Length: 193
Image 1 (cartoon, rainbow, N blue to C red):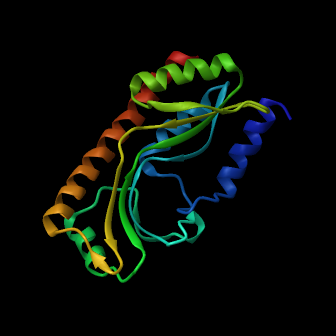
Image 2 (cartoon, helix red, strand yellow; image 1 turned 90 degrees about the vertical axis):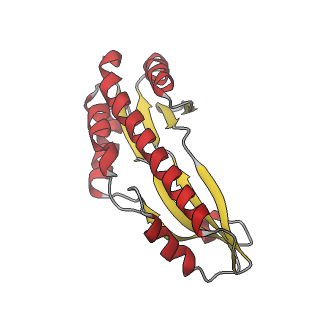
């Protein structure tokens, strides 16, 4: 299958069969994906605009066994998070995480991928690279804004109300920063045509 056929197949599948946990595209990243998918030599395969989660990690450490206690792709309030933390009832480790934007983009050629990656890195998607080269050049763009903080273990909440306030303020700032990078990337994609 050639690049154009793969692009058509992937975009049709995403339109009618979204397999993400959320089941839809995040609002802050829609315009960027539309722009990427309008370009002849690129298309998106998956994405996340960044999120804030509270997640229970089982003793096994297996990702498939982890449980989302709270998840949003929007900014949060201290009250929302404090309520969730107050109701944690688990002996497993529970983490507060703010995760950055992550975007997977296929490029027609190595040169196309290289041009795209240079733009993305300049904007701030520092953890970006090519991770598939067989059928297409598949890139992963990852922003750098991230928070990982254990908040409960062995049934004991480890954080104070003041610390929750700091986590929420910083997480919201990080989301704003990652959304700004998404917007800048969209506005700079005219350089790849």
